[in-house]
Length: 106
Image (cartoon, rainbow, N blue to C red; front, side):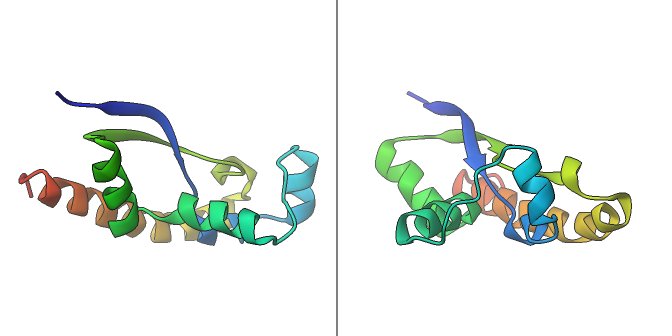
């Protein structure tokens, strides 16, 4: 049996770091204090590699449908967004290559 989870979340820290914190706050995204729990959640959202795959295996999950969590590209100005697009494809490509190899496709 295959288990596919929907609306799993991920974040791209390099993108969020380029967004003005005041704009993030105006949009209503909670930017918590850097407590250990907050940092753990941020790290887990950014992890698209071995740990996420291990967690999926441990839970019997075959595939995850990912959605960006929190502030995203819509909050970047165009010049920053153009720079961001140079970073993001490699980030995603690495994840997909790992997943395809895991499934014996790539």
